[in-house]
Amino acid sequence: MTEQPCPFCEIVAGRAHAQVAEEWDDTLAIVPLNPVVNGHLLVIPKEHVRDFVDDPVVSAQTMYRASELVAGLGSYNLITSKGRPATQSVFHLHLHLIPRAVDDGLALPWYSGRGKRVAS
Image 1 (tube, one colour):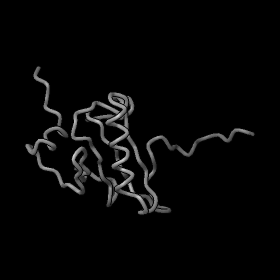
Image 2 (cartoon, helix red, strand yellow; image 1 turned 90 degrees about the vertical axis):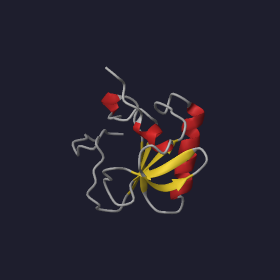
Image 3 (cartoon, one colour; image 1 turned 135 degrees about the horizontal axis):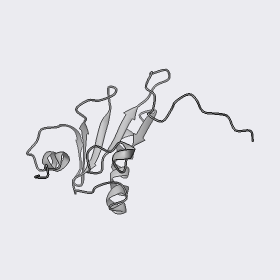
């Protein structure tokens, strides 16, 4: 079985299309194929890094670019994953930037509403 090319590396190389929101020399911010809300972006390093522990320096630089992008813009979730059980589906580091608003109806995957309050 032939391994598929990395879709984000294909975008970085210009062989696949993406709607680019911002570009730096080391990082891209793109609109995902299926944004969960308007303004949802993916921030990806141009260098192939599997996940956020693969290369801490590249991961930190990618986080820095994400913070530059949304500084002063209100409330955001920043989400990344490591491994398929943690919902990683593309094995190239990517940070989801998701703008949030009060009562926007978007629940994070781990919020069940069933949490028990622990006495302090």
